[in-house]
Amino acid sequence: MSTITVRIGRSGQDAEVVLTLPAERKESEAILSALDVYRKDAPLELRAVRCEVPGLLGYLRRTDLDRPGELDKLNHLAELLENMDREQRDLLPGALDMEPIGGMEDVLRVARDLDSYEKIPGVVHEADLGRYLVDSGTLRFPDYVKPYLDYRAIGIEYHAEHSGAFTNSGYVRRKGPAPALEMEDPRDTVLTAYLQNEKTGGTYALKLPASAGRMEAAKRALGVPDLEKVTIQELDWADHEFEGLEDLDRPSLEMLDRLAKAIHDHVTTPEQRATLLAACEAMGIDRWDEMLEIAEGLDDFELFRVSDPSEYGRQLAEKMAEENYDMLVELDDYIDFTQFGEDKMQENGIRETNYGYVARLSEPLPEEQDFSQTFQ
Image (tube, rainbow, N blue to C red):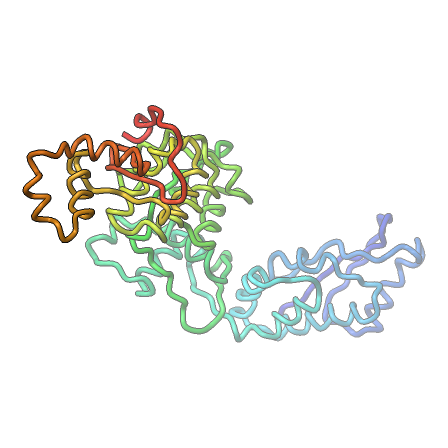
């Protein structure tokens, strides 16, 4: 049989009484009346709770015992605990931890609904959870990679994305089919930001663009409420063509995530990648937000796959000749295609970069400077 023992006093007074619940109302009122001797007008306060449910005081501390009916509710909670078996009492701390609790009504609601929860015995931290998810088949991996899996990282991400709570005896979650962790496709990762909490030394590799769940997992792993408070130690681009960009201004994590999403959504082919890099070089960017603007408006740039002005001049002349192609062939030995190509490139605002010749369609590119080092 499980009971609740509470210590109650009045605010500003040292005197206390002890109630063991459940109890008859008259009995409880008689015990509480002993506090009236000292100061009847001061509010009652719940100072301690002892029972088989650890941490219960934290959920009941705001209980207003002067409010009509609150003592009855506390007594009803004791009755519920009295009728619980060991398994249910083990479930209650986790169920309370994973639900929004604003007071006694919420505690009673969860206590009455324990049949909706289940516990995974022995899973008491993230590494246990990660191993359980793999061993149970919730997440499937080939056997040969299992010895190399980071079970803690798997558990952290799953816990951040799904409702659940760790207790001393296991992991508590709502019943029902276990929601599968959405495994990331390596092709969805644009870059990995290696983060560090300088106060604790903790590190985390955050793959971008990141889901809200992955961001929460990073916060939990680093022990911070806000990822802008951590240091970005290193960036690892999935496409090594982007590696020279580390020389840009110091980015925020939010900016990097927005950029990664823009590249993921708008830069999906080698042609688009070359266009982005050529545009960045031609525009002479030195800030990440400028690269983001280009990535989001990539259709405003055109990449010309020619090796030199002569080839561009020849292609342009062929296009201009159209049906008079035979005449162009006859004049081939008499046309300076290099000069023609250079003149037309200048006229059309086409700029040579390390990634090809590029032009901006909406307006001319900025005056040419030596921007190439950043992008080599």
